[in-house]
Image (cartoon, rainbow, N blue to C red; front, side, top):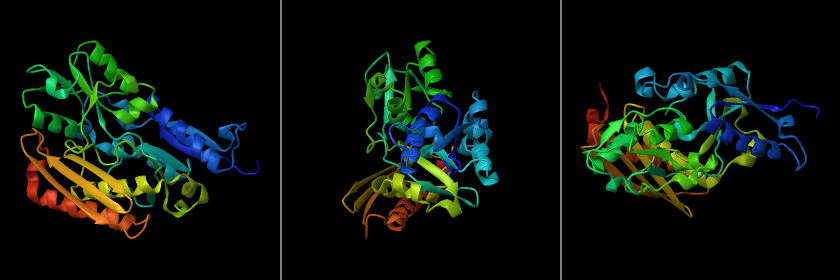
Length: 318
């Protein structure tokens, strides 16, 4: 080859590398790799350890929020040490550093939250006072809204770590993203799923995203891996996230569904204890299959309405 391969930055966790490996193959194919070619000749994967990976004993909101999963990777992107970055979209803050953009989102995996337990089949069936393991404020609040008797125990770490903690009895059940389980070949562990309408997942959950420098956004290989349906759905969900000033201190869920050019969106935010829930639903008819502006506008509108309803009660202050 006469050119250098595209350098892909990603977190070094097992799940991140599995997800990034899938995208590495997609990118290599878009760059012309054939069945017998080494994908690394076209797209090189560069693992980067982030602050969020190093610190595992505290909630993200206590140490700086979602940005700790992206900071070092984005610095490498801005410095030119990598050409793009692969992220789980649900881990991306509502705002990006100047000069960087979310350039391409491929087809979305299952967006639902998975319930895993050796005690029962569903969240609703957990015994009185059972321990639910999660580090997500949204999952905590949604679970407590349905089952205020539950004891929520902080459970951070990669998927294998959380599953091991469940096996050791540190929790009676855990909630994980079904998409991550599927990409790791662990989808069979799920006992049931949270209904994404009744309990909307994190904005962008189930979707991967390629982050690039702004000047690279229209490169042909990026256009080749974009999924229009997913792009429109997550534009709406992240619009709501932005309007709600979504962070690790706010319990925000959003779920968009596209039927032709008709986009439906559910947005909710809860108080951290789950006692109060603020929810809006709406829809928009898009002008065309790339009308991300209208999709985002719907998210901004519904998110702002939820924010007005809930006010400061939505923000965890402890």
